[in-house]
Length: 179
Image 1: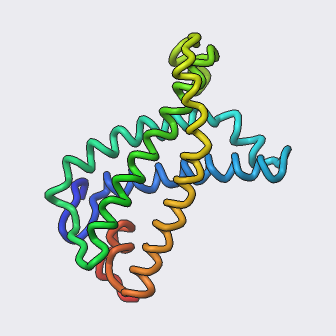
Image 2: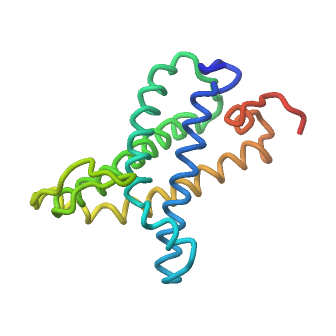
């Protein structure tokens, strides 16, 4: 099933969720690992792809946002006192996952380097000081996203092991499985 339903998130929602999650985790872990262990093999393998991965996340998040908006009336309903907080946390996560790669793209473009992804020049460089200055938000957004991911995973585990509800299974595509 491609579309979301009240029982489970559809395959498109799940695909976009897990691909973006994997790309962001690879991206963040390679950068953080590079900071604490310069020259490690994992970071050396991933960092040359940093911009390509970032551009991919930006494109996927644009698609994911449009898809999520188109599915609002179909999505599983979540009950509980924290529902409003969960909705706003997801809105913030989406915003950060768009702002992060966008700030990186604008920073590299505005610094004159241009945006290179997958071996191609997507946008030639320019001298645009306001865009280059957006680089100052790139790292703080990375830390915010990291905290949001940790909170997101903690709440998924709380739903699965604490509340024993179908929240996590809905995103895996298997609601109602025995525990």
